Length: 344
Image 1 (cartoon, rainbow, N blue to C red):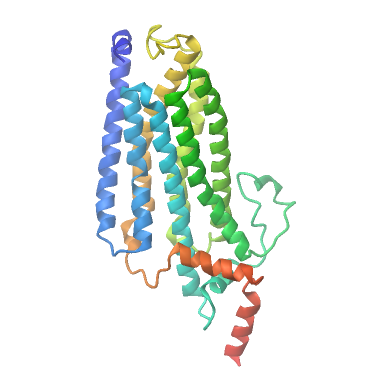
Image 2 (cartoon, helix red, strand yellow):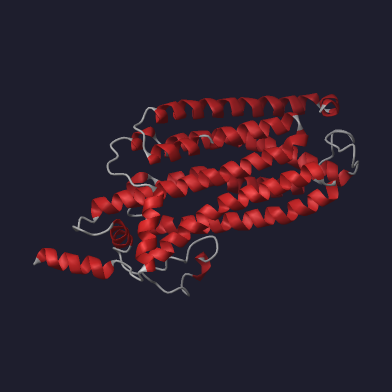
């Protein structure tokens, strides 16, 4: 970085200072919010809220580290991708817990299992085209028939969200190993393949989240699920856009010097442009971490962690739905028969 500092000190000092300030503020906001969360009663929901809170600091610190040492870019992306997966999985678990809680409150039929109450609450408005949602099927809404949600559908959406956590970990670990052990050419080839795989897995996770989001929109309206979803996914949208735009702009902007952000082991303009793209992308990510910290602190308020009664674990909810699905039941017949017996 010394060559870059000599070539254009104003530009690089500006990016180092602004990126560092944004990261420090993001960490301060997250720390304050985390302390407030820790004061709430111990529940599963508090655990997942705490995990989501540290998404912004991980983004900021890893991005800032890459600004001062571009060689750690692969490690920074590794940490960002993994914690994005953790944050999305935590958000999916939160929606799952809120769904179970609201279903118990709204469906008061005696002796009904938790799974039955969940399915009845999800389908109270009748059949809908639940699979006609972004990012894969929103344009085929007229072609997808309306139907009632089944326990297997809920479990499928849960699986789509959780699989991204494993795909991101495996993919980012593989990329990190190639960056440290293989040649630059092999690393670029592997990175291109694995990044597409992780993005596809991420789109599948978003599809699963959208299925549950639209199915629970009215049921969980008071919990501001939309704000929670946006606070976590806005960074993904911004990252995708900025990587594309920076890649296009870098080719038309002259480097400060031929040695600035160049690889001494592979001194080509193509490699230098890739490093410049990574540097600027990390700078923007550091700035965006402050935005994420602010959004998360508002979307996941500590006030939602109080007065929680009879909370279930995600594993228990899954087992209930799996049992209902394996028995080939959807819960509606059982619910109707119990309702009629109560009336009599």
